Length: 537
Image 1 (cartoon, rainbow, N blue to C red):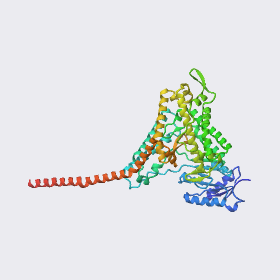
Image 2: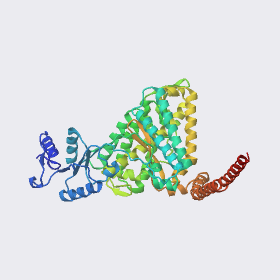
Image 3: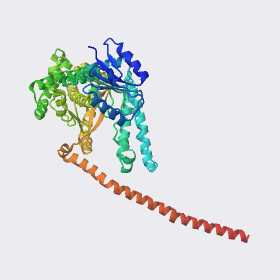
Image 4: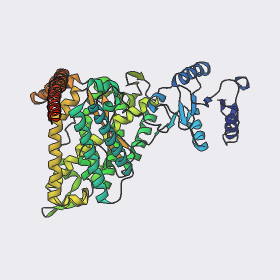
């Protein structure tokens, strides 16, 4: 039997959609009135026409859902709708499309009637966080103006890097400019902000992450279970790993030292063996802390298998006068049992990907198949993927330092020179020490975690706010001094600001009341003396 659809839309649009769906080879039966239905519909489609408020959309959708359960809802939005993507994803619908093409609409209906979920939204206009009221001082205005100019330049650089230019010189210049702009932004915020009055006027000026290239939100989830979620996320991450991954983060990555083909093979191998580990965890039927502990135990084997698949177990290269297998030599000479302290606990991610359990997103416990949960899972999985690849890449660079013949096989051409390779390793070591001593304590104190995300054409950083008090208590004394200095700065900032304001007021009083009046009296005396001299003459 053909699927029965219930359509609510404006008359002209309703006629066009009805003709499109009924003429399709699936032979959909479209009802535009509840009285035309023969039983219950398999899908309810609603196009609100004019742009409505979010509260109005949510209220109408709740009524439709309560009336036509268990039929899924498909919401069609007009082009250039003004609502933010994060708020639209909270609407109680299974499908969310913005100005879809006919073929895209037909594919979405087929997925929804089969029990899946579909999201296709374009990025709306980003809100301008730099609109400040007239009550702020000139220093605050200069700060916000500088941030606005830096963010505009950052957006321009990210646009030029998507896709990355073919020329090596152009790519290096753009990446250097990107790091320079991000360092300038951090320096401005470190020196001037955030001040309380400025935070009240423009709170998103300091809380928003680094500008990133925006490509819209596209999500197609054919099967709303753990296996379907994993296959969807794996396909999205594999597609993002295929191209040349430009470094759009503010950090230097060891992953950049690998050749493009080896970097792609490493990412794909990690995803493949992650699937193997997931199937093993599913077969063992573990939950809670046992699931987390077993995942940690399998990380070493997972990384070794990924490294073996990346370098191929059959490749041999000369070393000290004899041929030696590359994969086994790398595994024996690498310490792959280490861990990244910035990698979050994987228990929530594993519970959703293995057993399909709900996930805590923005303080709300939502089903794992909801678009918000799927996109959050993608962030967690991409962060694990990049950080695991980064750990393996750093060990590969160390092995290449003592095996020159290996560089031509695994590394970028410019790292064939010993000086370039050692310089990259020294920079990575210095960055690691700086992050361990200063950056990480500051992030822990601010309850902030940086997640790597895979976007179209690059690796970017996304800030996630979550409590990290347990990690804060485990810091060493050097890191504790950093947090103590931040606390001291926050405690003394209001008093220092009041002191500077008082000194400024005192300086104004001295200039106007004392110096100004003295100059006025001197000028009056000179004028009177000149008047007497003229009268005598």
